[in-house]
Length: 116
Image 1 (cartoon, rainbow, N blue to C red):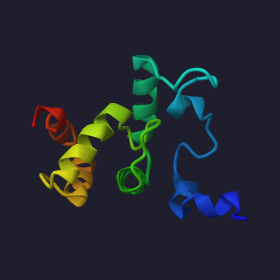
Image 2: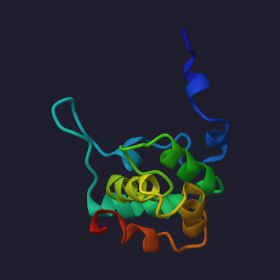
Image 3: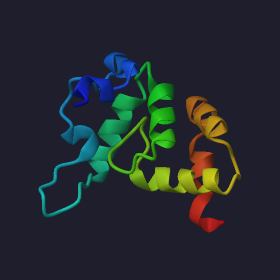
């Protein structure tokens, strides 16, 4: 059996969100509905992520592992789905996307995706 500690990346110990309520980043749901976040909840989570020292690690993890639920490095599910598409279509590399977000220009990549 695998320990839960083995599933949590080392960098997560330094994350601002470590120890915070999961509802902030994954919304409030029950077994009958998918998790959802309001715009206010999304903005609150993004504000926390924007101060995080492991922002780069978090975004890289979310893109490499194809995380589709929750807020990761300030990105929503919808944003990441667009990013997955442009990575899959080899329009931009994962590394370039991470650099763009770290430089405050991640929004430029989100305009691609479904429009292509």
